[in-house]
Image 1 (cartoon, rainbow, N blue to C red):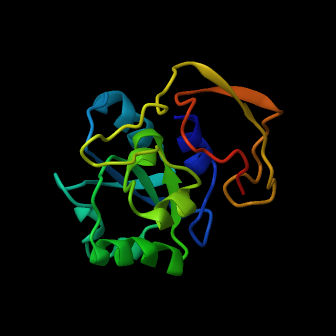
Image 2 (cartoon, rainbow, N blue to C red):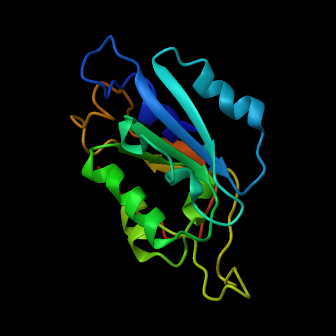
Length: 181
C-alpha cells in the first residue's frame, strides 16, 4: 500500500494543479479486503477513480474505450494470459505518457510475457503452467526493505520527504529489482 501512496498521494499528473488525477484501478484474479483497499482511493479527493475488473482468463480491462485518457493506471490484478491485442493496448499507455503503478499481486501477472517483467522491474518465477510455482519461489511477510528515493525530481517522488528508511514487504525470493526511477 505504501507504493500506492507514493504513486498518487500529493502528485498531480494533470496539466494544472486544480485538475484531479484520473486513475484507472484494475483488479481481478485474487481475493482481497475490498472495503479497506478501495477506501484508500475513494477518500483521496485529488483523484477521479474509475475501476475495472479483469476477465476470468484474459486481460480484458485493456479492451476499453479511452484507456489512454487516464493519467495513471494502477494494477492490483493477477492475470496469467494476455492476448496480442491486449498487449498492444497495454503498451499504448506508454506511448501516451500514462503512468503505471504496480501493486502486490500484479507482480505475478503475465509470467510468460518477458516485456511485462522488463516494464515492472520484476516477476514471480514460474517455469511450467502445469506446475505453476517453482520450488525456490515463495514469500515471507513483514520483511523490512530499505527505501531510498533515487530520482528526487521525478514527478512521482518530487516533494516527498522520506529519509532512508524501511517498509514492510512480502516476497523474499521474487526477482525484484532494487533501484527505481
